[in-house]
Figure 1 (cartoon, rainbow, N blue to C red):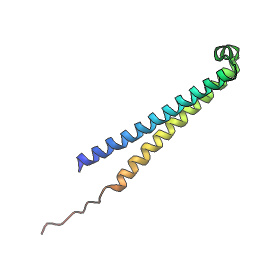
Figure 2 (figure 1 turned 30 degrees about the vertical axis):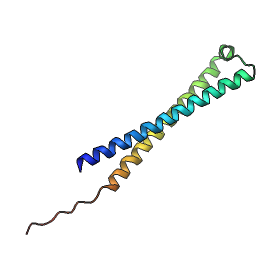
Figure 3 (figure 1 turned 180 degrees about the horizontal axis):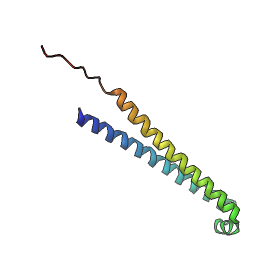
Figure 4 (figure 1 turned 45 degrees about the vertical axis):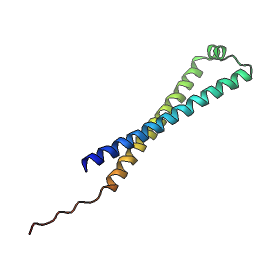
Length: 99
């Protein structure tokens, strides 16, 4: 019983890690697409960053931090759902009186 519980936890952790890897891949893909858009539009990314003032940089940093917090929250919620479903899936043990 204990072994299967550990295996279940390992499987759930693997699923969470897999989901996180998928999110990272999607974010990397979106970053590449945005870089490609800038190139196709004739916009120099380095120059754009240099021209950004402190206000824009703060806003961009705040948006980035909010995105990271949202991702962390999603992962935490997935872990919580995973552990909750594991608790519900355990068979109930019945104590038997010795006769």
